[in-house]
Structure formats: C-alpha cells, structure tokens
Amino acid sequence: MQKKISVVVPCFNEEAVLPALFDRLGRAAATWQADCEFICVDDGSRDRTWEILKAQNARDARWRGLSFARNFGHQTAVSAGLHFAGGDAVVILDADLQDPPEEISRLLQKWREGYEVVFATRTQRKDPPLKKFLAWGFYRLLQKLTPLPMARDAGDFCLLDKKVVAVMNAMPERNRYLRGLRTWCGFRQTSVEFERAERAAGVAQYTFKKSFRLAMDGMFSFSTVPLRLATYLGLAVSACAFLGAVFTFCEKVFADTFAKFGFTPGPHGIPTLVISILFLGGVQLICLGILGEYIGRIYEEVKGRPIWVIRDSAGLLPPGKN
Image (tube, rainbow, N blue to C red; front, side, top):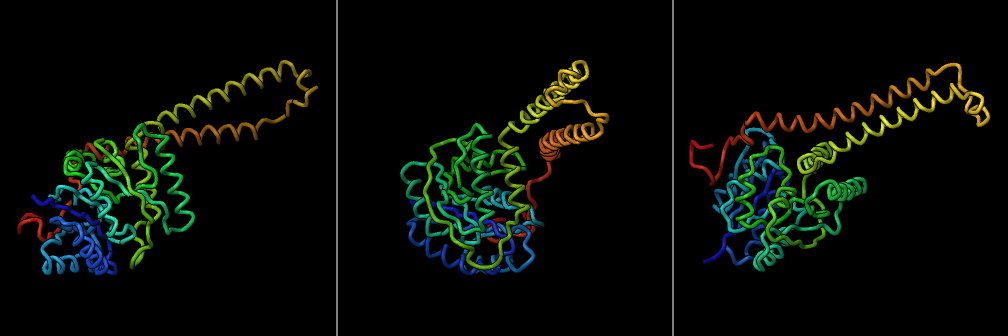
C-alpha cells in the first residue's frame, strides 16, 4: 500500500511567495513516489493569502487549507496543521522557502530507514549577523538549561511519523514550542544537514519580538533552571549583604587597623546605601519577572480556551464546521 505524506505549511501574509511555493513543492512532491496532501494554515493574514490558497484548492484538491479568525502565532498554526494531517509522515515547512522543499526527499529517505523524527539542521543561514549570533547562542543555552537532548541549529523544518504526531496532538498545552515537544516525545530521531536559503519573495514576517517570545517559550516550557537561578541570586545577594555587614562592623570596631590598609570610614554612607538598594531592587525584580513568566503560563493553561479558532476552510472541513 502506498504511503501518504502530509506537508504542513503555516502562512502569514505570504501572497508574494505562494506561487513559487506551489511550483517548487509540487515539483518536489512528484519525486517522492507517495500519495501526498498539502495543508496550508492561514494565520490571520491581512493580504490575499487566503484567497490564493482557496484558488489553489479549486485547481488541485491535494492543496487544502484552514483560515484562522485572527493571528494565533506560528506554532499554533503548525499545531493546527498537525491536527488535521492524515499522512503516514508529516513534514513541517515554512512558506517562505528558506527551507528548500527539494530537501524533503532526504527526510523521507531517513524515515524509510526507520527513523520516526527527522529534523533538518542548518549548516549555514543567510540572515543578518546579529540574528545568526543570537540564534547560535540560544540553541546552545537551551541545551544547557534543559535535560532533553535539544538539537542545535534545528528549526521547525522536520519530518514526523504519524505515531509522533499522535503524541504531540494529545498534548493540551497552549504555549507550544514544537521543537521541544518533538524531542520530548522520544522515538528514533536523526538529522540531515542543509544550507538555509534566503527568503524567496516578500518580507520576513517573523519579527525579533516573535523570535524572542518563541525563545522564552522554549526555555520556560522545558526548564526550571530559571527558578533555581532566582534562588541562587537571592543566596548571592544575601551572602554579599552579610559580608558587607561584617565588614562594616569590623571597620567601625577596628578603625585604626583598617586605616593602615586605606579603609578609612567615610563620614557619609549615602552612595553605598543607594547602590545597595538599587542592586537589591534589581535582583528582586528579576526574580519576580521569572516567577511571573511561569505564573503567566499557568494562567493561560487553566483558562482552557481553544488553542485556535477557524474562520474558513478549503478541502478539510465540511460546510458549517468551520
């Protein structure tokens, strides 16, 4: 029986690049020797993205789509695509073609060898130097913070076996970091290396703010180290305060001895007092911020709202089920 491959493509204001996506992904799929479907999730675009996707579905029924009622975010759009994917294997591919569709055949080869998670590792990426440096640092920091074997320089471009997709779909959490979830699932995992290309058309939609938020989700969803860091900061400040108190007491009691070493007590301690207050206040705010990140995520989870809201569909849901 011929296997079925699903390709999930999140889209946000991608009207400029969609024609190239249809062409390149379609030509790549012709070489897979498998039945396939393409699930494009319009994440509340403000341009003609959804109209173009519906027109493509009318031309080729393999191209199916969902349209969100508003922008819910990249990870949520991918999660919705995984929910509706019916393939034996599911490939996640961004619409901007920075992750080349031609590389999917290499992911499929590893899957056919028996691997259930195949992620693509970037050897080079054509991004601004600052973005490349921050991404390089984030992946290595995340490896240190989490007990999971997080892959370095691996984005969302990957292949997931249907068994892995079923496990990920069963996870109810809302602040989703899919790269971490696929690692958490386990199964047999491997990687292939590729060179990330420039964006094929249009302008980048994933801003620094969105990237930063994703990085925070990755760290706070899979690590409690920041909480321990708050404890360590508290202990360090307390130790410094205790040593400072001991030093000040000794300086007053043994003033002559300290004076020989140049530690003559000053008439006023206002600068020292201000610095101490600012330092202690800064540490307290950092600790409160760390706690706030975890509490905010708990608050989002307990509300129990739907992860996404579908406004329209093309080829996936029957009329009246949007």
